[in-house]
Length: 246
Image 1 (cartoon, helix red, strand yellow):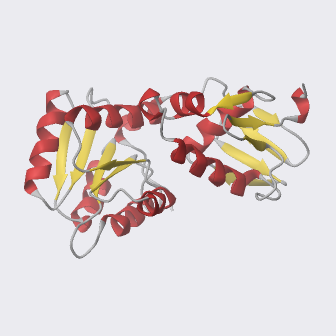
Image 2: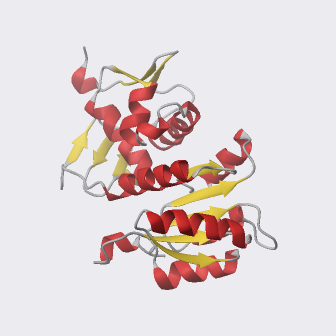
């Protein structure tokens, strides 16, 4: 099934459209007021079913999705949205456990904000996620061959693993690309987080660890014994590229 693209790709509207999904009217009011003060356009949904419908019909640029909703919770809503759209999604929740964050990210969420949150944090996270999705590739139409097992297609944001094409999420691709561009060097955690996610995320090491695991599962012959993405304990990660041995 072809996924819908965020409206920023196809629309000429000057301000990003944000879909806010929450069953608490006061939360929606709080989020709407602060987003509109910063120039965003806002639409609402009070439950998961309405959210999926809004994604289909309005094609928002980003979705703010509450986890704790009756009948169909945010995780199930996220799963259904991911079947039809690659729109960026930030989860809003009172939960802060690592398990819940990992579950949301595994299902395709792009970020997680724990309630209560400040207007400044909300706007900062929304802008950071939108930046990641609006960055265009500077190397078009080129396939970089790492070795006989792994190649990277910069035009389609795919990897070619043992002859098979594997699609990467936007964040996965940005992380892999930054590692490849610094092949042979150890890139510190904070640097990767700032370059791939944004400066606001420089302390979110758990995000980085999770996405490195995602990448290893997709590109490594044996993810438990990585050949390409190596861990430099306490420091960062290094991409071992046989073309650039140092």
